[in-house]
Length: 407
Image (cartoon, rainbow, N blue to C red; front, side):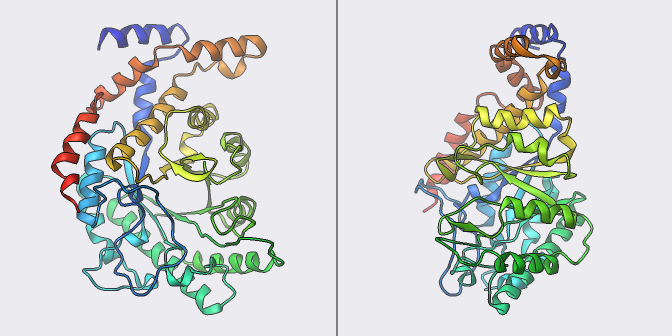
């Protein structure tokens, strides 16, 4: 125990906080690392025809992962610099098909066998996502709510195939697989029929989710707007909240999927009055859903404060969701994942008496917490879990020895 941590421990003890207990609790909570930060949401599909309805990562920093082996190596390097328990979150476009074109509704568990074997060796769980974008059948901005029966059925089959893959991941790894269903469906301007797409989406989701699969945790994710769907999004938060409640699935709240001035922390206690669990996508919007690298800011702290203050850590899943191609991608992983763990630790270091305080006493306590020796406790958390406090040199060496050699 360092002198700094010893003093910090004493300082928090005066507030009735056991820092050792907080560290142990903060290390246990899984945070799912998103594969798409490592390759700019490109995926490894063998393409057939033009893409449509994709997602854009901005920047052209060298060293993007070009295949599964490179991405797994990058993720392993990032995880070696992170304290705590982690998972890896995959999209369907990260299938490895031995150079053969496989249509998305024909994907099978064998196309993710390398990911499953890798996760098994590392003793981590996998989460999963169908990819309802970057495909010719998504080029007009509609998938599960598409007016064309054949197109809509194609995407239903894709979702069904992904759920079966998720079930195998859960069985092989001995850990439930959280599978998140997000679609880009919506209209750019002045739709005259807001009803029919939502009727079709309800029916499509019911068909997609009909099969009961052990170990699969189905989630649905809403959004306020997107590029090309500024006026109308079929799968809004209101739609998915009610769908999740009536179908027994989990609602996903993404920190960037609301109005640019709207944050999600106040929504957590409201939704958890009625929903059993929530999936929280940890992101950082700037002016719009721009998925900037997560940092240890007030918005992030507020999310974890609400979860901890509500004693709801066992009712939430946490997954990172951002993609920045303008800086070193390993550093992006480490900065974001550490920020999430810091926010969790900071929330666990609040005194239990805080919710009972009112008025000036409450404000005084909150202000005093801002200057508590949090940094020393964070360093102790890292050291106790074998994660380096100073990590950036490792990233620089990896860039020089590995990333710089990628063309």
